Length: 298
Picture: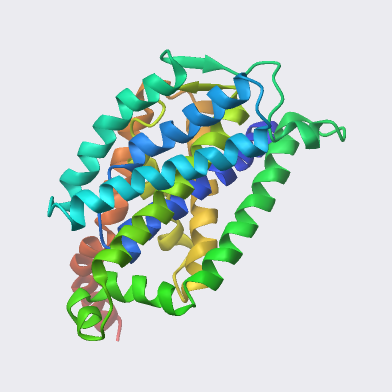
């Protein structure tokens, strides 16, 4: 059981990077960006192809980050310059990336078995694969949380947050909201692709369909993190996202351990997200009931 939980934590740290990317578009920019399902697979494809052909794993991971940022840029241009609705712009990019990812890998999946990855450095120190993934994931997530916390405290970062909160007010303050949307999408999909590249190296393979359902996983992690760990301030939000992603992976691991068929996981995730998103409605229904009970007791 301990091994299962440790494996879930190590994988959750890698998925936490994707969760932070989803949070930037879903919460900060108030955009449902489906580019995620293509950019996470794109990160995996770029990393797997370049590592398979002998490139340094760290350089390959950086190229995956750049590739994801490019995908976000395309979606941003579709939305801001061509006036395509954000949801449709993300869908168009996601569909296009399926073919792009096939072109990158040359086939539907690519194995990285017995090939050095970014985790090999820690494995050479005597750590197991799970421990190496956990240590690298913790370092990567800590660095990303620190950088994003510092960035969103700058003038540009505040402008992105203002654009998501109230675009009319942001434009009245002289902020170019189109540029802020593009920048937010670039950062978001860069993080998503980075996550995809690390997940592919952790699992020793990349698959063109590995992004299917990833947006729901990201939303589930965001909601779980916000509901359980709170959102008192921005730094707390970032930590909650990481803990939410880890909690989600632990829940999935335990559910599988209890015997749930793997084919039902996406259904389970969708139901979890639907319930979590509906919590405010449930609370509104229960509030009068609680008041009547407390009043009766008095």
